[in-house]
Amino acid sequence: MRNAAGSEPRSAERSAGAVLEAYCAAFRRRGLEEILALFTLDAVFEIPLEPAPLVGREAIARVLKGAFLGLDEIEVWLEHLLDAKDTAVAEGVFRARMVGVPPHVDGTPARLDFKFVIACEIEEGLIRRWSEYFDTRPLRPRERARLYPITRRSPYWDGTVQAGVQDFMVYNHTYFPLTYLRAPAEEYLALTEAVTLWDVACERQTEVRGPDAAALVDYLTTRKVDDLPVGACRYTLVCDPEGRIMCDPVLLHPWPDVYWLSHGDVDLTLWARGLALGRRLEVVVSEPDVAPLQVQGPKALEVLRGLTEMPLEELGRYKCQATRVAGVPAVVSRTGWSGGPGYEVFPLSSERALHLWQALLEAGRPHGLRVTGPNINRAVEKGVTDTSYYSNSDLNPFEAGHERLVDLEKGEFVGRAALEGIARAGAARKTVGLRASEPLPLLEWYWPVESAGRRVGEVRWACHSFALGAPVAIAVVERALERDAALTIVHGGGRTPARIVDFPFL
Amino acid sequence: MRAEQALKAYVDAVASANVDAARALFAPRARLEMPLLGQTLFGQEEIRAGLERIAHVTLECRYELRRLKSTDTLALAEGLLEARLRNGGEVRRSMALVVVMAAEGIERLSSYLDTFDHRLWSDGLITARPLA
Image 1 (cartoon, chains in turn orange, cyan):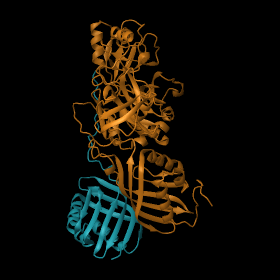
Image 2 (image 1 turned 45 degrees about the horizontal axis):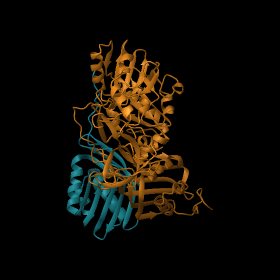
Image 3 (image 1 turned 30 degrees about the vertical axis):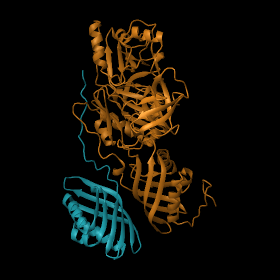
Image 4 (image 1 turned 135 degrees about the vertical axis):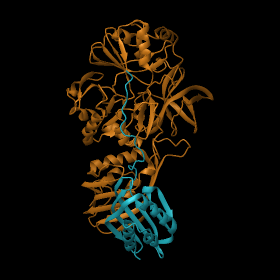
């Protein structure tokens, strides 16, 4: 008799210990189907990394798929095994290299090495209960980043703490939770195959309200505004007078005479206030108490549908509508930073923020929702980036690949004269995708890119692409460089060969 | 002493906070792995001192063994660890225990349990304050 995978004989006579050893051997081979075939259809699978026991092959497959995507050079060996016919217990050691996790700052590679105990119960030769015991604390950072009261906190703070937040970026003077307790591969799978919840309260709104609202927003941004109907959104740019990108916000028009610029890390509200004062416009510019959440992933609609008053299926891409989510007045837009399906929820007050957070967690539970930060790996694959004015200065829309977002035919706007000049002369640099020949460290500053020993640009984003199974980067380089050009990325860990490839990567 | 007897004697000694009885179960160069407090303790005296520290921070600490398999020199058990801490905290955790015996007593006792969600820090609820 052969098992469901057809790979090895299954015998009702096989002992639990033999099945346990078969599991470990298959794990070393990354044999997903082989492993699943060892389980009964309703098997219970317990590991400390999951909050509750998993039941059934599908749930087990989800965990194992994440492990195989995120681990390499897997070694499993058993030091002790006590075997009876239907039950076995073993003590052993697991060792693996983590994929997509850059080395630590001291160069130590990211590894997953730990000791464990496994208990296994079988029924007619198949596993009906699998329990692993190990301490996950050493597998995670020792402590979360240091925090200081000078920086604002999100109203979802307690929710993110509960979800195991580990590390933050300071963004719009707000702590932005980026890293949780899971492996990047697991978060990537949750985003691409299920659903994720992000605390992006740091994504602030510059609200422009009043009779001259359209005029101010039109002057502030590089695309037309007067043709944007109520209920629509538009990806646009804000440039400084020299034509440098200040941010690339999504412009929402949720109500007549009200616009929100949902913006990146720049003091846009102050800038807009200054422009409004200088131009004596009849507007009120403010930063409202609106702390967005992103629900991203293919099951985002299923999570939000039951909570949202409006029929969410009818909300088109780059559309927004005022409604209620879990009873909380909010604007919902079909936008996001994942490069895939998803929504943003903008509650109109942070008063009931944790109620909303909890409701989304509950609604997401049956769909495998994971609390994560924005997934850099996926964003980079899809060419979704961000522009930080204070560290990314001197980047203009033509260099960033955002020509389509500059409307030189519309009326006067900030930066127009400079951008006309750049358009006439042609940009000196361009944004390209790079495929690196070996894993790259964590990007903590922009790395120089060289060609034949000469600096020709710099890397702005770098990560592992799970879809391509390779390290990738986004760089700004001299315009003359073409596809397949051989370059060298110079970083703290050394020099890594790379070549220019098609971009976006997917 | 067989491994199963040693394991049960250790569990009883911990439950009664009898650190001397627990110490006497170990071989002179034994190893005790106890991740809850980040400890790997070597030798009878270090083990006694470590167990004293545990007794000092707990009002009550007990293991419940649910499934146990053993030979003369090896015991592997699944179970539950329950503790009430003097600071008001509570621990309730699935765990596994492994005992490896030497001629003079326990050579190694390893505890396997996840300690991650025993957070050492929390600031409570702090909400954002809007600019305008």
